[in-house]
Length: 138
Figure 1 (cartoon, rainbow, N blue to C red):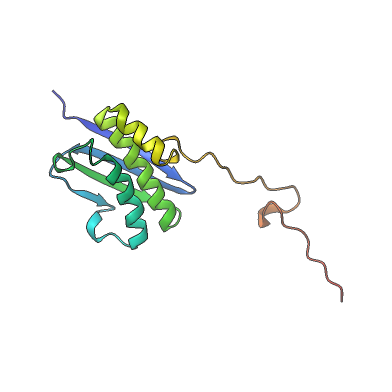
Figure 2 (figure 1 turned 180 degrees about the horizontal axis):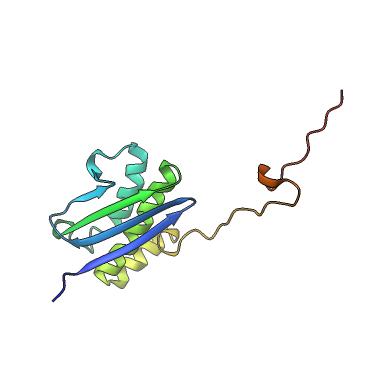
């Protein structure tokens, strides 16, 4: 019989986080850095918030979580990691109560962020959707 393995991804803005959950010794690493020494501190707290909801439903000492994150900024990556952890743990545990707990805490952890960037208008190329020509009075 094959070993139980879960692969899930989470996204936020330009950041993408891919997570692998398997049986292990309770190790959590982000880009080969253990979670307990991950910096910055507030990004670590966002990630730990996603883990703290699942502590009643999942035995973290019996699984290992390996996360690869790329693109975007620090907090975009932190939110992408938190989202991928929430989705992965829901798949791992197959527990509807855990899924409901994540939806109550923050729906975007499971459902994703629906917001999109505004489309650029014609004639302004890469300057942005609302860029106007600068007016000079002298």
